Amino acid sequence: MADETKETNVAETASETPKKKRDWKGKRLPIVIAAVVAVTVLGVAGWAWRATPGYCDALCHSTMGKYYDTFENQTDSLAFAHKGVVNGKCLDCHENTLGTSVRMAQSQLTGNHETPLAKVTYTNEFCLQSGCHAGAGIMPGASESSTKDLAFDPHSDFHGVQQCNSCHRMHDQSVFTCAGCHQVGAWEGEGGIPEGWTKQDLGDGQQGAVPDGWTTPFLFEAAE
Image: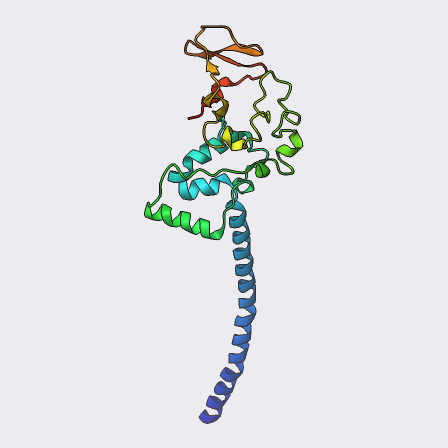
């Protein structure tokens, strides 16, 4: 009798084992699916985040903080002026490959980085591409320039086609390259103001003479 009971218990245990395995497999599938979905969502969100200023500032503030501030906060920089054009995404202008991200993260963790960062310049073709300034009529050459009607046209082709980045800087102070040869800008009150120019108060007791139609002379510095 005891032997029969033992055999019955063994048989029941053997029959329950496959059932338990099936139950575990059934419970494991939803967990695996949920994990895959979570990883996918986090990956997509992380990939989208890397295109935003917050990504650069959060991971590399000591090196990128200056550039983040000029883009994200209201400043006189061209970076901030273009914030709406690029929908607040750094990567609409800056290419960020996986290799670049790894190198930047490594330099940040080791402290082996230099500031300010090396300047990045762009060609006229980049700035004048479709969807950017090409549609605004801002082209090198007096006949196509949006400033061609001003008494002083900085986009004139008199000196040949100039590079946009000769004057325009995104995260740094823009410069007035013309001042490298032409004596314009600060005016001490001696002599007359050139025809087509207007005297403007620069503050701190200084006056400036700027071409008619220009309203922000204080945004420019003479190029070195």
